[in-house]
Amino acid sequence: METLKLIGAIIVLLGSIFLFLGALGLVRMPDLFNRIQAGTKASTLGTMLTLLGIILLNPDWTGKLVILILFVLITNPISSHVLARAAHFRKIKLSDKTIIDQLADDGVEEKDDINNSKE
Amino acid sequence: MKIKSFFIITIVLFSVWVLLNNSYEPVLLIIGAAVSILIALIFCTKCSVFSQIKLSPKSLFYSIAYLFVFMIELIKSNLDVAIRVISPKLPINPGIVKVKTVLNTELGRMILANSITLTPGTLSVDIRDEYIYVHWINVEGKDIETATNSIVKKFEKYLKEIYG
Image (cartoon, rainbow over all chains, first blue to last red; front, side, top):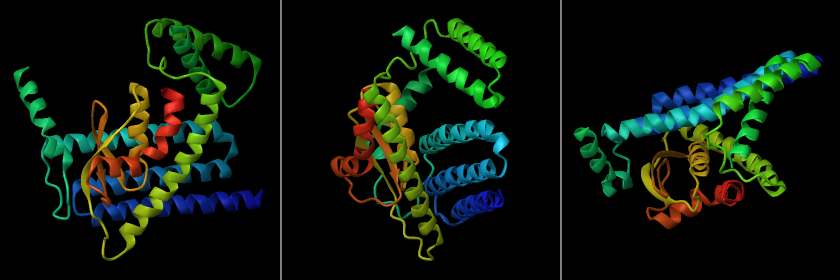
């Protein structure tokens, strides 16, 4: 029982390290898209590991925590995708390091802008 | 088609019920099953969300295999981002590239886009028909084929079996 708790605590610690790295990424990355990259990935695994650790610490809550893990796994990528898409529509500047922007090059967004303004 | 949708939604609702209750008393299970079937009957007589999933032993096997591949990619992705964030020089080489998918169904494309977002250094920004625009933190090739090969190929062979 004690070892299980120890393992759980270590996993929670590991999760919080990933969450910390995600926060560090938000500060260090140069532009919005790279920040979303750091934020999404680190927070997904960080949250999952933290919740897994809590499962080991508190086996009674397993069902609810499993639902939380699935929820985070499904909603996190969707929210970050929507943020990135909206940012690109608003023509937020990409960092100077960016070497290619195929979405702007294809010009598919301009058509949408015209359609939206008609409505 | 509708029966399959109804069946899957009932199963999903019932498993959420069991997980939330965290007990296996017969009374609770019966109530849960009745309510799940009722909700599915009321709200899912016309829905077609899950009608694109293929239900067969093969697709079940591929689903489980996909889950494992996905978990490994997720962990790799996190280590990758962590290393990039920690290293003092900040080794990034970002750009938005276009990839092509062979999946035809909407649900399959959605799962693929979500998987892309959670794998190493990639973030799906937009979907236009069969093209997905991906923000890549370390661009390895600007043309469609190179990007497709290194971003979506590893998932597609599984998703193709599950969603067609």
